[in-house]
Length: 155
Image 1: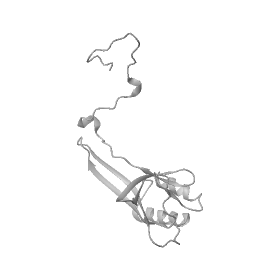
Image 2: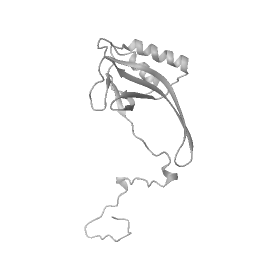
Image 3: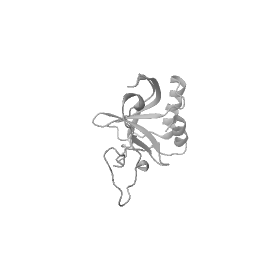
Image 4: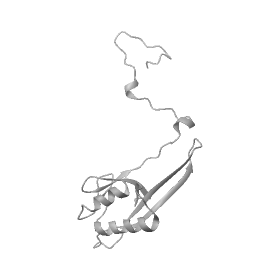
């Protein structure tokens, strides 16, 4: 989800709810303690220089159980962050405290913002020796009566 997508979604909502990947909701008294811009400049394992910029939201829950962040308030925080930090329409990454700080992608189902698990990946598979995954559609079917020999590519 991008900044423009969350802004459009917030304009349609009366309340905000964030749903964890396990289906549980982040408690209603959460705070958005940060909206930031994170720029990462790095070299991948194949030696290619890369950069990535995301908008970062940090969710936090305190003991103030009467607290409730309203859509128009979060929208104003996002718009101020865009103005002050130069955030454009970057993808959103959400930090939320579990046993450690977890980072999630963000999606929206029309009602709840869904925290989506993120995975690491090799960005230079073609340069660092990681074999490509075989596509199931590329497997050779063996018909009855055929044989397979070592190195023949059929098994």
